[in-house]
Image 1: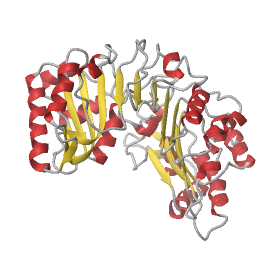
Image 2: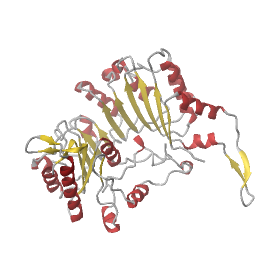
Image 3: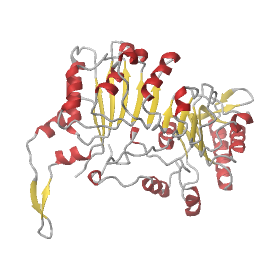
Image 4: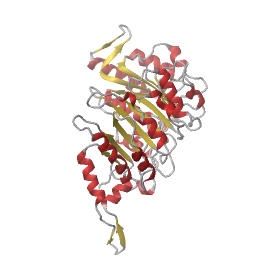
Length: 440
């Protein structure tokens, strides 16, 4: 029987299909195996109920359907109760100020309502163009739903009422990871206050953090536990981040720096340094970076949004001579890694490949007991940052040494050894999760 690790309920057809399944009255039956032993045969709905760990759900508000938001809000706790072993909820909401009290009550008290550990919440404008700037729903969810024991929290989508946290009680969750991915959130004072509020109870547990500026006070407060930091700049980066193993910079300017001091000022205990840019850096930029990083890190990764244009340091602009420039960069990087000395260089080029790279390279924080390790925020297949992977083992086995992907020009260089390495990185799941045979 095909079972799903992740499921999406975002339209009428999906909801009605699952509703019919879970409303059926089928009961477990008993059947004989080949040796005559009687075993219990669980109905498909029970197998599905026990296997799903990730739920994608959207509370819609569409043009021409005035009551559709309430309609999908009413379905929200019902769907949650279908999957009592749920680990992660990815919730999208169309311009809704807050959930009704009865919805919160059902999430807290319903018999099969899950105690999730990971939450992604995304606010979005409705089809009338109304923006969620007055919404306080994210704060309501992380404080009012007491059944949830969140360790991973991602806030994304459009800006909501950032300063409204002052109207809510303290956040009770001890987060392992917090990621701020809301677009166009320019109000720095309100954003700083929000980050302080959300992470106030996580100063002893926070291991992975994504925020615009490393100068925020929370970075210094978690200097002993923080392992991975993704931020927009190195300005204000504390010098006492003794446990930091990974630093990914996503700056406003797109060029990989040529200034040597930029790299020498990085924390010396890093295992992985990543740089996000709009255009593929030219060879001179990669050469400068690697020569300065070779003595301090094991892996250097470039994430380029554009796979067909390279940045020219001489003209301070990009070049569209895709074939020659891109192949030059590929050949140079390939040669560096074949040399076998210094930092291992990777390039993820193109919008999709860049996102895949960023999701795959963040550290995997400590797991919760009783939950499958294969499920975290965004169901990441993450490597440990204490080395990121066993580099020496891979070199000896002839496995992945270079992983360069590009939507326009680079072929994916992923061998069978790559797939095996990713599979080996996932610790065994609890017995109840082993029935899962597919991810949707």
